[in-house]
Image 1: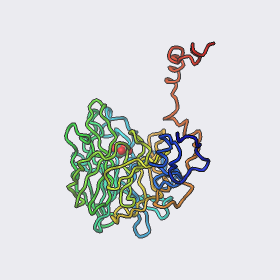
Image 2: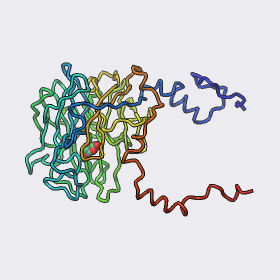
Image 3: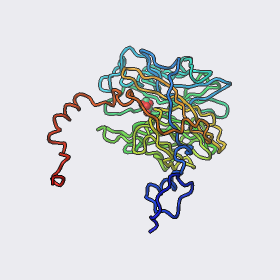
Image 4: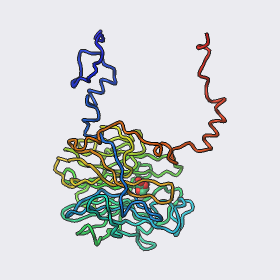
Length: 403
Ligand code: AAL
């Protein structure tokens, strides 16, 4: 047998043919690379920073930032903003005054910055429509497209009160402008159809995310199926393609093209498209890549990736087959209170490593991460586990161990 040699201290740069390799070490050479994450363009650790202007603020919730763009030396971002007298009460109890969710009774606002850390909220870009009209409940979760010299804002549009058995039901509409500061001209109708009953995107199209790719406009999105019993939630993402910003957006016959990820966050990379996949689904916490924008594969595993990432993506609309990757963006975070907020992430997901410190894999997260309120064992579970231990926890020393 080949196995008389032992795996060497220095990992060979080529797959060794004279050694018997375990499946794990075969994968190291076949799928990954002998330099591990240090030389994986799709791997990064993430550092988070608080930002001013649209960061944490009592009584105001800001979330789901768009991708960031830079126009004449100024960065722009659009996001969901809610400032309500009462906190969200859930779909069963919501009224015209009481929001159901954090993104209910919200408007799309925008902010600008000169350095990416200090932001100034500039005001509303698109607000809720008058009562009884399309989009009267909430407009949220925007993204920006620049196409043929015009700006297009796409956003989730909610009409009428939330209903408990209707899920997070909304569709996507659009407004356009000659300038990132507006004024915005609203289309006031959906630009993409919901799927038929029993299709994966029958209840909602969420998180529209726009890129220009292969000469067309690509809208990635997360679908949600109608789920009267709350049993059919899948967290999958698809894509729909159009020649014109107002549509029609034609859904790919391969949809869903991503089987995981709660929010969209994509960027051109080389000739293809990369996706940041954060929470939810079997392939959560990964970066994935599709050289054709459709057939994604897992390229790295991440720790604590940004939620609802809105990367600064200068070549999102360049369509030059030479995507450079990203190194920062905005995302949101949750608080124990009623309002969430936007923060900044930094990373190195560029084509060539530019910030080697982000390639480290030995990040040690401290107690705040592990003992955060949403993660730590609540008293009820703790007491139940103490109560059940006598019957549920098998003895470690078993008969076989007793001489
Ligand atoms: C988000 C996004 C969409 C959902 C809700 C608000 O993180 O996935 O925008 O509708 O949650």
